[in-house]
Image (cartoon, rainbow, N blue to C red):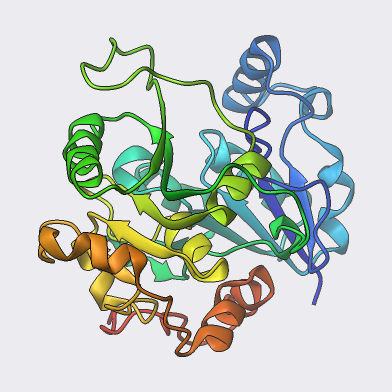
Length: 315
């Protein structure tokens, strides 16, 4: 079954590879320049001619695709309506890669006529969406022999979003116990400076992976409204790294292993140094890795139920 996955790629971090071996994985737009963003908003919102001026080459593939999965970009509803008009009868899925509160309102998404799916279990329960987990692209995996960054015990990368205070508290624990760390904190939406850390420039995704591979543990800090896994726990799993997270709900997922996952605010902070230096537990490692690769993620869209990594049923 031929599947077409459409995403608004983040060119600054280069998370999305150019090609994917398991599907047609394409950028929605030719460009993310300010002019292009303005043009596509006008063209899509007011149903003006000229869509091919802003949309990428995927427009030539929709008729030959069995399923079309559109990520929750701001123009997704308008794009899906256009797809369904261009190729009526096609199965089209709108997949929330973000919590609904930070994305397209469900009442608007319903108007697209697409199936609505989400990575977030609580959103699925609240809005009646279908669940599919986070995923990881095989093409992003580092070559085992590739050069690594300077080794550190703990690595964090992410935008501030009010997280600097938590990082500062962890810094104090690490300093007191001789634990080395690399906090790559990025400014969020032109906010003011942090009282604790100097902001750094965005890293290319490849550089993020090099740092992860050079660490014993990585930190994952999530938004309060989020109940779905971010990409960090999956990276920790794939690279056999310990995970330090403030997501208390992670214990409901099969990826959770108390030997590998330390939950801030739930586990004893005094145990953190021993946790970091203890070996990674490889129980169920192979099956979990296979579950989170993109090939398996795509297959789950065709199953009756797709919540297998979440211990609580969503119905």
